[in-house]
Image (spheres, rainbow, N blue to C red):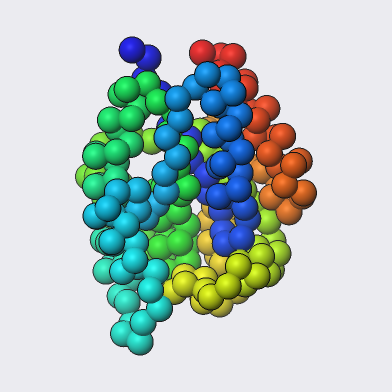
Length: 209
């Protein structure tokens, strides 16, 4: 059986990842592809419990290494119990964030060294990396206005604008360094235009296979 494709959707708050993942899944299913839609942190009952720990606003300061290790603990459970079995079964996995988010948020945002993150990436993932990364990019102010319109903000969404500016810049640098694997998508445009761009790239992936 042909291994499935591992596709991730990245970006800062409010760029429309959930909406675009749903549309991408529908586009693939219309072409007869079996699709698993999942998210990080989360994706399994244990990883979702870790997600709740990470996102809940709290008075106690969360040390940057605590946050980093919890992210990779959730990722290890998610990857080995859900993502890899799906890929081996020939499914295409569409994941709302993966390790690029850790480099962007804990690296760019928090200032954790890239080397420390890379050590955990190798430990947890070995050579597993997404086949395609859709980076949905929009000005931070645009995304945060959308996020605030959804209701109460989680612990990450409560960060300052400068935090998200560092996150966005880290994402853009990573995309520039690996243009063959990353698709930088202008997410400030209307949803239909963004979805059309993503569909075009997905159809090209299917045609190549």
